[in-house]
Amino acid sequence: MKTTIALLLLAAAAAPAWAETYEIDRTHTFANFDWMHLGYSHHSGKFTDTKGTVTLDAARKTGSVDVTIQVASMDTGVPKLDQHLQGPEFFDAAKYPVITFKSGKLDFDGDKVKSVTGDLTLHGVTKPVTLKVTHFACMDHPMLKVPACGADAVASIKRSDFGMGGYVPAISDEIALRIEIEAQKAGAAKK
Image (cartoon, rainbow, N blue to C red; front, side):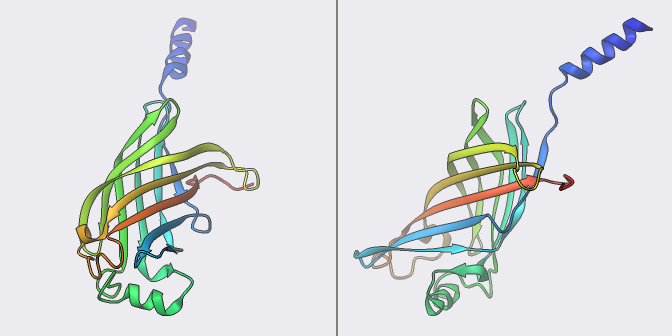
């Protein structure tokens, strides 16, 4: 009997960790975008309403990402420009109100995620995109007292690939993306 209990305890200790699911913190997650205007200067904006989940299994070096961004949450700092960009010449938010990114492929460098490859759906078009992770950290949140993860990720896309090629080259086709994300473990009791 003692041998059986000892074997069960050893098996439990040797078992790999299970994947953990983290819910995106909507107040600390932003998708930023940047473009060149008429060759003079770079302009930028961000989306302020992002939700979704990130699943990580650090032991197996696997995970997934499922994110939804509300196009109507766009903020360039210029309300008239926001309206124009959300109109039919660009994002056409009335027809395509959300942007999604879904990934089941996370690449690790040791314990850190170094890139995330998935499908970006924008303006009704889905294309593969790889986000390079420039910063990644998981630890207990100092104020919420729950497990949390955060990351910064960057990519470059061509808006014409997503059916949004109006005004190229006056407004650059290439758009720089920067995603800043924080997420807390789903279901974790906040102390």
